[in-house]
Amino acid sequence: MRKCQSDIATYYIAMMYLNGLGISKNIKKSRDLFFKIRHYRDSNDWYLELNKIIKKEEKRKDSYNSSKSYNRKIDVEDYHDSWCFISTATCIALKKTSNCDELNLLRRFRDTYLKCFDKDGLKLINEYYRIAPTIVNHIDEEELSNQIYINLYQHYISKCCFYIKNYRFNDAKALYIEMVASLCEIYNITISPDIKKIYNYNN
Image (cartoon, rainbow, N blue to C red):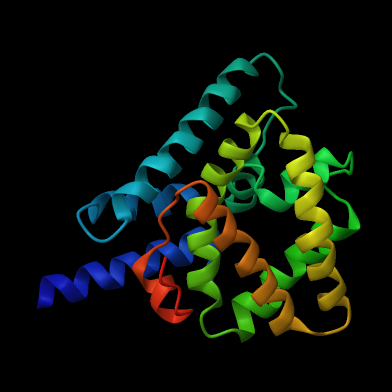
């Protein structure tokens, strides 16, 4: 029992470092903590993913050793953006920048409403970070990937932004969940049991 409680505590501390909740974001500390409890839940998956990002960043730093001006500090936002998640990939397909109004609005929605005011928001965010890269990889392999992204923007992302602008936060959350769930069905991606239980998702 004591070992189980210790694993749970370590898991949530690792998530705190990953998301910067009450402490400074630190992807390396998060990775190291997930490694210590790699037998617990999806900790090993998180460890492998974070370690891959850190190794990639270290290799990139080595290639810039000759430039004294290169001193980029990795943090959780680098990790999120580097995967080019669904909304970002969609906006790129529409030739929008990574700093466009839609993406900034969705980021604020994530960092304020979901993280601070939605009781299941953090679980939802962490699950999204786990499965979204796989979804984007599948879409990118499609022959008509650009059209798929355009459809996602028209049917989901633009509407989510409309809901957020009009303070219809629950509607925005529900529509984004619908989009991700439908893509998981199409590409046969497994959603975690915790999320299935919260949202009564049976597929």
